[in-house]
Length: 68
Image 1: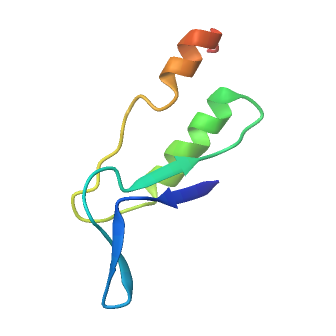
Image 2: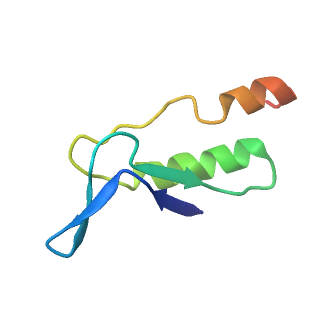
């Protein structure tokens, strides 16, 4: 699993949010459903004030590929 930050800045030597979509989480699994599960596990362990995340991660890929 990899976490990429984008909408962040540093303040007093710490990385802090700076608005918008601040993180991207990527995971690999044996198939798409497993990768999605790993992403949600990672996302649920990330907490900061005002944090929220998409509930439809990778659903376009699932639909396009016909993966259940």
